[in-house]
Length: 164
Image 1 (cartoon, rainbow, N blue to C red):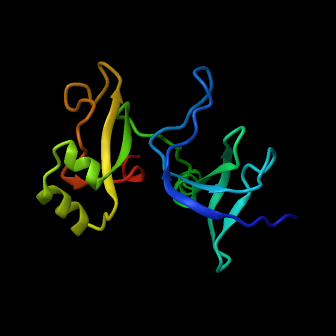
Image 2 (cartoon, rainbow, N blue to C red):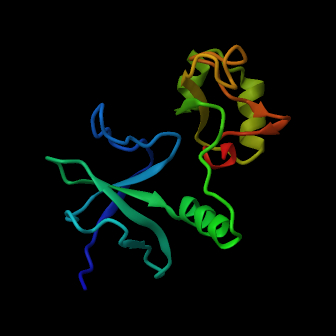
């Protein structure tokens, strides 16, 4: 058993890119920290000072001390689906999004009224912006790269998990 200390540096990192012909995750927040984890640490729990598991070790960025951790909300969702005999799906919009902070969203044209509504709903950092989409896919013609996602089906969406 090893217990390694680290300080979470970011709570909203995209997963590292593993190259064109490798699996690359998307539409997921990862925690990032500088830590001494290495190969074979994947799946290890990340524990907060109170002893609660908050994430699982998912990846390291080769050549750096950066490690990436999958937040537990994603793991809980998958476990609950599996326990109920359902498949673990990854959304059907065939669209990738980028989480963008409110100051950058203002430069994209988000109004203060729309930002205020997102903040009133509990979002204090930013919202999702369309990064790319599959031509002919379900969202094609409805959104385009650079669009700020306000809601889907009348429900406010500012984070990745509700998309699934």
